[in-house]
Length: 289
Ligand SMILES: Nc1ccn([C@@H]2O[C@H](COP(=O)(O)O)[C@@H](O)[C@H]2O)c(=O)n1
Image (cartoon, rainbow, N blue to C red):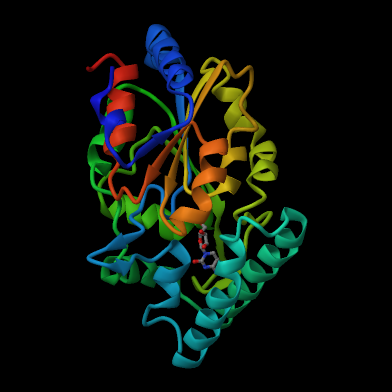
């Protein structure tokens, strides 16, 4: 059906079920489809030439907008909390307050740096941020077919938007739910707006954005893309869902994460830095293949 699904880096627990979901989505076509995707390490690359690529937060953390002293503090936070985020053995109730603690501490440090909004575009341009190979086909095809794309990120919305704007793919069908910066009248960062979104509270974020999901109630078929077990709840606000196809990028700690990812996601892509598989599926569902 879709040759890309036979690649050795593609793991599927129940192929018959996946085929049935894809077939059913193809039958009803693009007008019933919506795509919900995480951003960091899902639409962006995890690594390039053997080097880790930055998340939205890291783009700022590593930039010239941050003092050397603050960079050390932000790196300490990353080294402390990232292993907790990706530890599949630690119970969620223990992880939740620690994730809030990480985001709050990091945001506090960023606010202290008095970042000016006019400098964001420059630091994004100078960064090593990279969308996954195949991103142009992904964004352009969804736009051409009129399929809404919700990017649901625990990163920083202003930075995320700048990444996709500079890549020329911030099309009108794209909506972003994320942590947005609040600037004062001089354009200086003074806070973050709204409820904090971290990797494991996307369900609450989805339920707060009822308006968006209300508008899409005629689109009961969802393709969900994520890289964390926390991304699985991004579609919890969707009304009258009929089919959901969950595609997970397994970027890190492959051996220990494979089993939980295979249980949670319909399709698991192991160390795949491209969007080739989601693109092949989307082309098939929308009748292009
Ligand atoms: N201070 C921080 C906080 C979080 N991160 C990483 O950002 C990712 C969240 O963004 P999604 O688009 O994936 O929702 C998450 O994976 C954290 O590791 C960070 O780098 N710095």
